[in-house]
Image 1 (cartoon, one colour):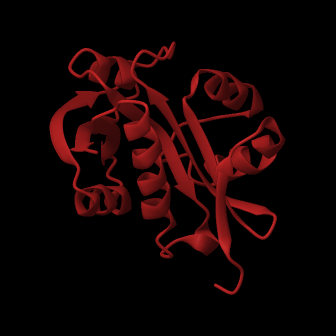
Image 2 (tube, one colour; image 1 turned 120 degrees about the vertical axis):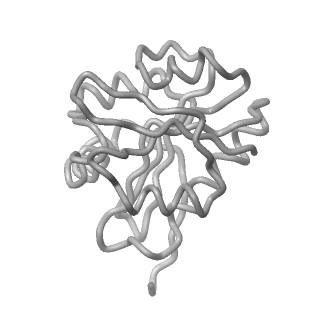
Amino acid sequence: MTETVALRSATLDDTAAIVALNDAVVAVTSPMDAARLRALHAVSTYCTVVERGSQVIGFILAMQNGAAYDNGNFDWFADRLTRFVYIDRVVIGDAARGLGLGTTLYDHLATQARRRGSLIMAAEIDLVPANPGSIAFHRKYGFVELGTRTLDSGKIVSMQVTGL
């Protein structure tokens, strides 16, 4: 990588880039058009992009406990945890995978969440259909399973947490 990368808070000017990144991996995230991103951005506590040059090459979107987020996975964690941050989605573009940017985004999120009083980072990982890259990443980062959920779509997810 010849150009440096930088993290910054996402703005609505980043909408097209974030939606395109999400669309490229929609099978392992969930659909998100511009209107959905604006709605998620409005309730998120953290929406951070990683840039190389002037190009957005990744992002993370997360909500602190207590957020006005109507989502079954978020609610599942809220029923069991306090003082947590929920990772709704993290995406690194194909050309930037394997450079440690997922870890960089998670480390940045952990630092910011601790400052706001969070003790736990929470995320769901697809089991059926399996997302082996995500499973391996979260295991390496120290996440452990609290339980599983079967979504209305038939997808089965592992509900995981790690301490900050």
